[in-house]
Image (cartoon, rainbow, N blue to C red; front, side, top):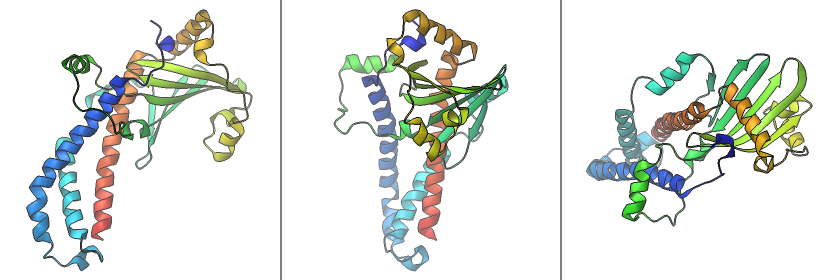
Length: 266
């Protein structure tokens, strides 16, 4: 079935994937807390003035240090193989600024400039509080067969050409090896359609965003599918995005731990 005509779904599988991921990190923290508790209690004998003014600063620093050590020990030092393979293709360039939650991928295709923007905020979201940890054996079996990265990632594509001042933009959801398109918009002014400014965003709100994609004629959907496939926006690319998002989120989390620890100890 066409990836572009897959039904939009924020499925239970996605919720379970997020919950399992959050639970594993929570379990690791609990184990660390148990190991560091005696150390933290002894640390109160150290002058709190070394860690600012609060008497809790030393214990907090100890916990942050333990969590940071755990994450550094668990994380691979070298660049992951999936990222090496992606870069070796030389098709897409990656713009990833430390400290920001958005990632930009871009490429040239003939006279076109193609840009994709996605955010790691989608995988930072916690699963719903009422999610039940205990599930039936059948549901657990379904989890075992589910893709590793099944959570949805919102994506925004833009297409501009040197031969025309306009821009085409596509809003889609990337999940389980598919791009589920919400809508396709056209802007007569490429700057309005592609600039990442508050002013441009405000202007875009007044434009017609195009019809819901799944309401288009099936043959027209298929042609848009071919349009994207030809430009390398395919299943392989759809699997790369959530994998890179998780890689990015892990780097940002480790950086956050270090920055907060350094601040507490200053």
